Structure formats: structure tokens, C-alpha cells
Length: 268
Image 1: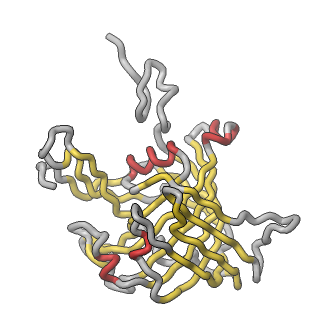
Image 2: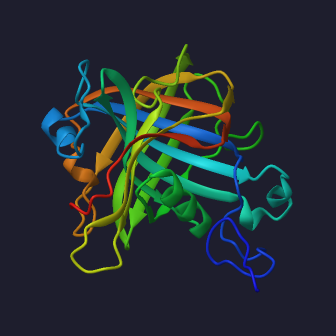
Image 3: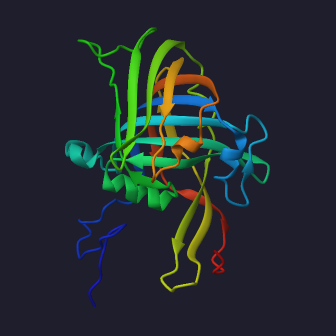
């Protein structure tokens, strides 16, 4: 009998073609985070049952740009950078489930196929996009990590710009913000192959970092603009009040999550 191997599609005799390896997945990255407040009703419309608005500051949003290097346990992808380097931009809100506060990614764009595949597994709603952000460097014209340093960030998808920001660092901070600081509550959805049969997979899952390390966070201010698009809805989370902006370098390990609820009864 012939067997096929691989953690994810495509599965082959050797498994070498699998789009993603098995966890743990390890990440090193530079994060630019812009927090602001929007209409809580716009957050609520993105929370399927049984999730509810957060009790405190329900309209808070974090828009995060991340420049990543990632790999599996062996680390071999780091020596083949096309397999390890990617960028993403994502919007995070907070929600409540059974009295506990969670973070939830409601929009996210990435620029590599393997990042999309990981998102399908984890419950992130990943789409392809074009993401860029200023990188710090100790020499030349690039900004240092210091007061007054300025970083730009842009996001586009389907040939249309969705967001742009300029972050100016002010001083060291105790945290990297509060919106994206909880375990994630995500849904894993897969429609049935049979027409009219609803969802073959319908799970609410919790996940977060198995381990985390990070450099000194910096707080600052941001100029943030969101733009309309016929195929994206990020601009519905309109900026009503700025909160703060942050910069931090981090290292994260992701190694699975926990099932909170499962409903595969066929109801859409």
C-alpha cells in the first residue's frame, strides 16, 4: 500500500513538498503597532457567537505590521531565506468568551504562501497582500531605536493601498500595548464539500505563544490613514481616537492551541 506524507498539502511519498512543516514554529520579528479607538459597533459586527465585546474599552483596535523570519524546530529555513522571511499586517480587537478576555485577529494580509497555510491551521483569516515597513539599523540613514526615530509602514492588497502609518518613537515603555496582549480566540471554518451541508469544520480555538522573549518596547505617536477598497473592509474600523504606537523586537514559539468549542452539526 502506498502512503503519503507531509504535515499539510501537498502530501507526497517523501513529504518534502508540504507547504508547512509540523510545529513548533519559531519566529523572530520587528513589530510596529498602532493602537486606536473605533466605533464598538464595528468591532461587534466582526465577532461571531458566542464571542462578545470586551467589557473595557470595547472599541480598541491594534493595527500591527510585522517583519518576520520564521522556521520549524530544525531552523533549516533560516539558511534558505526565501522559506523563512515574510511580512504581514493585521488588525486585532479584543473580545470576551465565558468571562475571559481574548485578542482576535479580524483582518490579516501576508506576502508568502506558507504564511497563509499556517493561518488556515491556526484560524487566522489570512489573505495575500503587499506589506512594507522601515527597518532599523545602527549605521547609515536608517532609524536607530531611540527617541525621535521615525518608521513608515504601508499595506496594500489587490493593487489598492489599504493603510499607511508613520510612527515616531518617544521613550521606552513597559508594554507593547494592550489590545494584542491576550490569548487569541479564533475560528477554524471549512465548508462541507456537499452542497447545502454547512460547515464540515466549525471550531472556536484558543492559542498563544508557547514561549516568548522580547527587547525593550518603545512607545510613540502615529499618523495612521485607512483607505476604502472594493474587496477589503479594514477601513470600516475607522480611526476615531488615537491611543499610542509601539515598536518592539520579539521572539515567539507557537506549538498548538486548545479547542474551546466545536459545532459540526451542519448549520451555517
